[in-house]
Image (cartoon, rainbow, N blue to C red; front, top):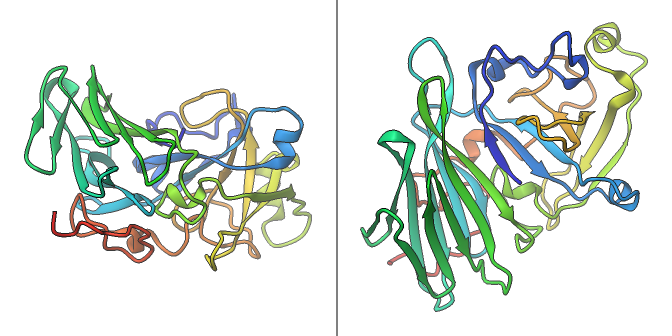
Amino acid sequence: FADSWRVNPGEELLGAQEPSCGYLGNDSVMDDPLFTVPIHDPRVLAQGLAAPSICFEVHGAAGKILNFISDLCTSVNAAYRSLVGPTRGNFVSRLGVKAVDLSGACVGIEVGVASGCSPSVTLGNGTVLGGLSRYDSSGVSVRKVGSKVRVSVPNCEKTRLVMWAECTRFAEQDVLKFSVTRGVNLRPTSHGIIGQFWNVPVNITPFSYNAGPNRNEVASVFDTSKLYLLTITPPSGGQERTLVGELFHLTWDYSRTPCYYVGSSQGGPFVEFPDYRDPVIEGRYSHYAVSDILGTDFVYSKFVDVCASD
């Protein structure tokens, strides 16, 4: 799953009971969306263990729309809003999916939140899906299931890309959670805050930090036996990045799936490793901003907009 999660400020990840979970500073205590993305780790898979993920945070900005997934025939964007009341931070309030169907036409899908944490769904042609209604045409399927919306698109492949949007309550406000439940057809060249990690091999080796100005601070914060170096090498000339991650047996939502918690100046461990300051995502989060909820115009866009006039 690739999830956008919310964590209550009172549930800090570094605590007496779980000190190895890793405290993510900066915006984690201000509740920016948190991400869990599966990675291809041959070393772990060869041992028959559960496939690990990367857990990271991206500092979004209220009023901005950022791209989550950009592939040849699919684009997914998320609109950020500010939480109100005593809890500070941002959350995802709308999702926009633009997909090329099997006939070559573009289909726009916008998911929002209505009263009572009921998701609203509007198609690009203005059609509103109400109740248990669904859209199913030329390989694109959209249906509402209670507080959830299931979106399935071809992505110009035989196997469908399946995503879910779910309305959840946080700090007495309705927020959207986004998940990819079938992403096998996302190309290694896909991009976006989430898409750039899918189906890209990651080289993982143990990390030893026995010297340097922060070594005592590192030892006081992390279980150093669980620190690893993760090298992400995207195909087609993408930015290679080397990160320090702490392996923990739970993800943001406390699922028992191993996850490497990584960070940078855009969100992550408050201890800086001087030689490993590469950004978790390629570039900066501002490079993922788009003009509208169905827009595809950002720095790393991979979407081939064959239907810009639709």
